[in-house]
Length: 390
Ligand code: FEO
Image 1: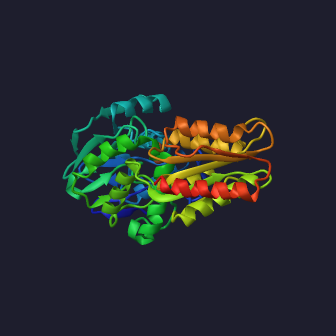
Image 2: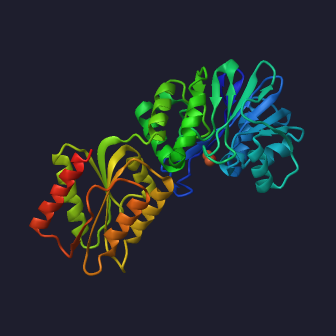
Image 3: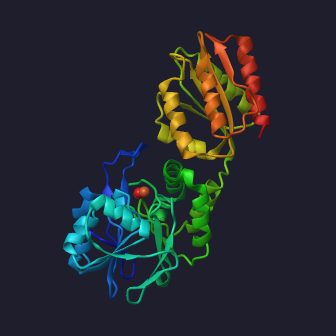
C-alpha cells in the first residue's frame, strides 16, 4: 500500500474500494475511493479519512511517510462515514491530535462516535498555520451535508473539497489526465446527478468562492484528482448547478404487454424527426441511478407507465421517487401510458411532474389496451409538438 506524493510534502493516503457496487441507492459499477491526504509540515495534518473497513490500508500508506502517531491535526471536512469512518482508529493511535472541523461537524462526530475528542472548531474564513503552510476553511453546507466544508492550502494552490468534484471510480490512476476528460466527466456527472443534484444553489455559492482561488489542483475525496481539467469541471459544475440541460430528450418507461413501449417508440420517432436526439431508458434493464445522468443532461423528459392495480408500475414510481428527491428544475415533462380499465398510471405520473414544477405543454397520452396505427400517428405528432416547445 504505497502513498503517492501529489505535491511536495502532501501525500494521497486514501483507500481504494474495488468492490463497492452500491452507495446509498447509487450503483457504482466502477467501485470508488475514499481519498485522505497527509500533509507533512511542522504540524502533521491528515485531511479526511476512509471508510472503517479500509482503515488499515490508509494507515499503511501513512506509515510509508511518517509514524501515524505523529499526526497533530485531523481535519474532518465532512462527517459522512465514508470519510469519518476511520477517525476513531486514527485518534486511538494519535491520541494527542486535535480534530479540526466545522461546528456542525463537531456535533455530527459526537453523535456518530460518542468520543470525548479534542476539537478545534473552524468557520468560513478561519485559518490554521501548520508550519510553512496555511489551511483555510470555507463552509459549504449541503455539499453534501450541513457539516460540509472545504480546506484550501494557498501555498500549494491546492483545494481539498471533500465530496465536491468527486467521482465513484476505483482505479490505479490517481489523476484526471491519466483517465481522460471524457471518462472522468461522465463519472463526475453521474456522481453530481446522484449526490449533489438537489443542492444547486449551495453549489453555486461554493463555486463563487472556489472560482476566486488560485488553483493548481483540486483533490476531492472520491475518484481521481483534478490537475489538468480544473476549468472544465468547474464549468460543468456551474452548468449543472444552474440546471442548464441540453437540447435533447429522455424517454423513461416500463411496459407490461408492449403497448407503453409502442407509445414510447412513436414519441421517439416524433422527436427525432423534429431534430431532437432521444435517449431511451427501459426501467427493467436500467437502474434508476444510471438514468439520473440522462435527467441531468436532458431538457425534455417523457415518462411512461402502464396502469397496474390502479397505479403506476413500481419501477416507475421508484424512478419518480428518486428524481423527485434530486429536484431537477427547468425541465419539460410529459406523461404517457396504456391501460385496460381505470388508467390511473399515466395520470399519477403527470401529477408528480406537476409537483416537480416542470412545464407540461402537452396533455398526457393514455391509450386503452393496444394502440392502433392512427393513435400512434397522433402520439408521434405529440412528440413533434414537444420538440417545438424547445
Ligand atoms: Fe462521500 Fe457525503 O460522503
